[in-house]
Image 1 (spheres, rainbow, N blue to C red):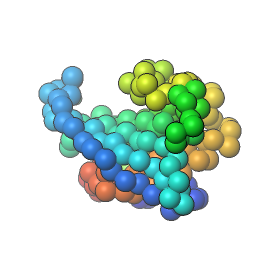
Image 2: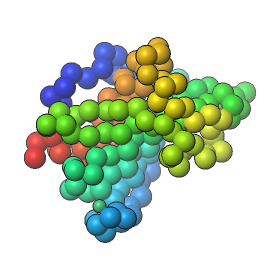
Image 3: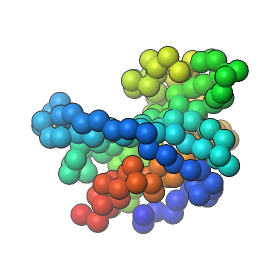
Image 4: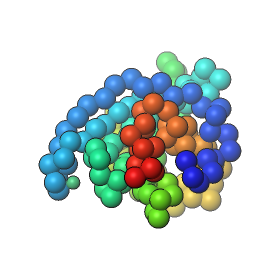
Length: 151
Ligand SMILES: [Zn+2]
């Protein structure tokens, strides 16, 4: 990528767990949604979801994360949803944290709280969030998004 990735993104391991297809509401082009798990030192950190319209860099992409505590003792109130929009701005990949309430992940039975942009920006959580989306971006799940950068 032409922008520098966040420090620490290599600490996160990305494991794709599934994918599905659909059609863009505005133009009918094939869409793709992939999801999987995020780990750090083999410990579960969260789940990720990436959605985009194939061959349409101008549509951008949506990245969603579910972060917090996992394992048998954790409950949904231990976890929260964070949402980001991905865009190419003058050829440079840019992530922007947006309100998670508008995303499907906010209604997930795994999620207690949907974080707003203001809950994330300027906090230590933001550093982790940007490192995780960079790790997802660099993984096989986002191979097409990295090609957009070469259009
Ligand atoms: Zn479209």
